[in-house]
Image (cartoon, rainbow, N blue to C red; front, side, top):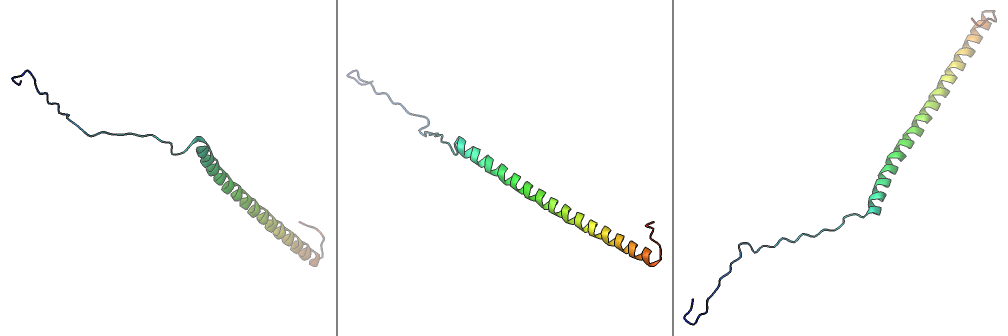
Amino acid sequence: MYKDGRSKLYITLGDTDVTVEEEYTLQDFSAIVGTLGGSIGIFLGWSLLDLTKLAGEAIHKAKEVRRRVAAAASAKIFLTRQAGTDSFE
Protein backbone atom coordinates (compact mmCIF):
# COMPACT_ATOMS: atom_id res chain seq x y z
CA MET A 1 0.00 0.00 0.00
CA TYR A 2 1.20 3.43 -0.87
CA LYS A 3 1.47 6.33 1.60
CA ASP A 4 -1.45 8.18 0.02
CA GLY A 5 -3.84 5.23 0.51
CA ARG A 6 -3.66 3.77 -2.94
CA SER A 7 -2.83 0.15 -3.56
CA LYS A 8 -1.89 -1.94 -6.55
CA LEU A 9 -3.62 -5.16 -7.55
CA TYR A 10 -1.89 -7.65 -9.84
CA ILE A 11 -4.03 -10.18 -11.69
CA THR A 12 -2.43 -13.01 -13.61
CA LEU A 13 -4.23 -15.50 -15.79
CA GLY A 14 -3.16 -19.11 -15.62
CA ASP A 15 -3.96 -20.08 -19.24
CA THR A 16 -4.40 -17.59 -22.05
CA ASP A 17 -5.14 -20.15 -24.78
CA VAL A 18 -8.69 -20.10 -26.09
CA THR A 19 -10.20 -23.12 -27.86
CA VAL A 20 -12.78 -22.25 -30.49
CA GLU A 21 -15.06 -25.06 -31.62
CA GLU A 22 -17.26 -24.66 -34.65
CA GLU A 23 -19.81 -27.11 -36.00
CA TYR A 24 -20.83 -27.34 -39.60
CA THR A 25 -22.62 -29.96 -41.64
CA LEU A 26 -20.62 -32.09 -44.03
CA GLN A 27 -23.68 -33.48 -45.78
CA ASP A 28 -27.28 -32.49 -45.49
CA PHE A 29 -30.17 -34.96 -45.45
CA SER A 30 -30.75 -34.94 -49.20
CA ALA A 31 -27.07 -35.68 -49.88
CA ILE A 32 -27.18 -38.65 -47.50
CA VAL A 33 -30.35 -39.98 -49.13
CA GLY A 34 -28.79 -39.53 -52.57
CA THR A 35 -25.62 -41.33 -51.57
CA LEU A 36 -27.49 -44.26 -50.05
CA GLY A 37 -29.86 -44.48 -53.00
CA GLY A 38 -26.98 -44.45 -55.45
CA SER A 39 -25.15 -47.19 -53.59
CA ILE A 40 -28.25 -49.36 -53.38
CA GLY A 41 -28.93 -48.75 -57.07
CA ILE A 42 -25.42 -49.83 -58.03
CA PHE A 43 -25.65 -53.02 -56.00
CA LEU A 44 -29.10 -53.88 -57.33
CA GLY A 45 -27.97 -53.09 -60.86
CA TRP A 46 -25.03 -55.47 -60.58
CA SER A 47 -27.31 -58.10 -59.08
CA LEU A 48 -29.78 -57.79 -61.94
CA LEU A 49 -26.96 -57.99 -64.47
CA ASP A 50 -25.73 -61.16 -62.78
CA LEU A 51 -29.25 -62.62 -62.89
CA THR A 52 -29.59 -61.92 -66.61
CA LYS A 53 -26.16 -63.47 -67.18
CA LEU A 54 -27.16 -66.57 -65.22
CA ALA A 55 -30.46 -66.79 -67.08
CA GLY A 56 -28.65 -66.51 -70.41
CA GLU A 57 -26.23 -69.25 -69.44
CA ALA A 58 -29.11 -71.50 -68.30
CA ILE A 59 -30.95 -70.97 -71.60
CA HIS A 60 -27.77 -71.71 -73.55
CA LYS A 61 -27.15 -74.88 -71.54
CA ALA A 62 -30.80 -76.00 -72.02
CA LYS A 63 -30.48 -75.51 -75.79
CA GLU A 64 -27.25 -77.51 -75.79
CA VAL A 65 -28.85 -80.36 -73.83
CA ARG A 66 -31.87 -80.33 -76.16
CA ARG A 67 -29.55 -80.45 -79.20
CA ARG A 68 -27.62 -83.39 -77.74
CA VAL A 69 -30.80 -85.28 -76.86
CA ALA A 70 -32.16 -84.73 -80.37
CA ALA A 71 -28.86 -85.87 -81.90
CA ALA A 72 -28.81 -88.98 -79.71
CA ALA A 73 -32.43 -89.79 -80.58
CA SER A 74 -31.86 -89.39 -84.31
CA ALA A 75 -28.73 -91.58 -84.09
CA LYS A 76 -30.74 -94.28 -82.26
CA ILE A 77 -33.50 -94.14 -84.87
CA PHE A 78 -30.91 -94.39 -87.65
CA LEU A 79 -29.17 -97.36 -86.01
CA THR A 80 -32.43 -99.24 -85.32
CA ARG A 81 -33.62 -98.74 -88.88
CA GLN A 82 -30.36 -100.06 -90.20
CA ALA A 83 -30.77 -103.15 -88.05
CA GLY A 84 -34.19 -103.72 -89.59
CA THR A 85 -36.37 -103.02 -86.61
CA ASP A 86 -38.56 -100.03 -85.81
CA SER A 87 -38.56 -100.46 -82.04
CA PHE A 88 -37.15 -97.72 -79.86
CA GLU A 89 -35.99 -99.87 -76.98
